[in-house]
Amino acid sequence: MFEKIVAIEPLNLLSGARRQLRRFARELIFYDTLPAGSREIIRRVGDADAILVSYTSRIDAEAIAGCPNLRYIGMCCSLYEEKSANVDIAAARARGITVRGVRDYGDNGVVEYVVSELVRYLHGFGGKQWKERPREITGLKVGIIGMGTTGSLIAEGLRRFGAEISYNSRTRKPELEAAHGYRWLPLAELLEESEAVFTCLTKNVVALHEEEFSHLGQHKILFNTSIAPGHDIPALKSWLDGGGGEFFCDSAGALGDDALLEHPHVNCLRASSGTTEQAMVRLGEKVLSNIEAYWNEQAC
Image (cartoon, rainbow, N blue to C red):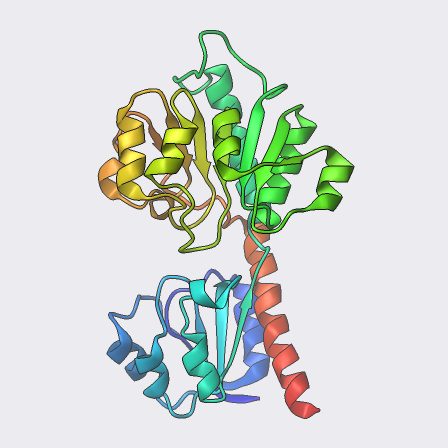
């Protein structure tokens, strides 16, 4: 059991998960505002030996060094790669601090968002319509950039509506190609051939720069499903100003520039599609499972 767990910022944990956290600490403190920086994080943590953090604050080397009792950092958000994490995992490792994150908890809601917005745009249900006549997803040439969990689920969802799926990722997925007929394409070729492109990348990974937008061309549909831009922002603006492309994202963070929110070819919900009730249940279960696994390892 920890002496003290401090949630240094608002977490997307439901009340049931919060109650269950009390099994793992003699004292539990929740903050409902964002810390202003490392010094404020250090003040909030104090003598705690465990902290919980979402994706909105960065736990850097300064904050880690200023919390001498710390031995566990629970990320209540996705952790895919060390370099894209909002926790300095290398600095934590150097001090013997365990860092655990979660993944694959909000993807289902993202897929539903994609299908909803795509259908509305193809059919003209929302005031905008892609082509002169309404279109179905059937036969739509779809390109997925990043074939992780979200990308794979989007591909499967759109395939079931009759879309033709191509993808680009760092590693090929021969099992998906064999099972579903997906095609792996070099990025430039995928952008040129696809009518609708979906960037499904981890945080801080940017795939679309000026050259890639030139391959994408106009009269295309572009979705970003990540929590941060998968594109170079000036290059996106230039592409949007061309007048023939339409960009979709759920949150302003995925767009990357609030000045573009009112652009006529930007469609941003300004809300997260991955924070459904079911997603928050899965998040809580995984956060608790990480803590339980940590203590099981300590007992060995």
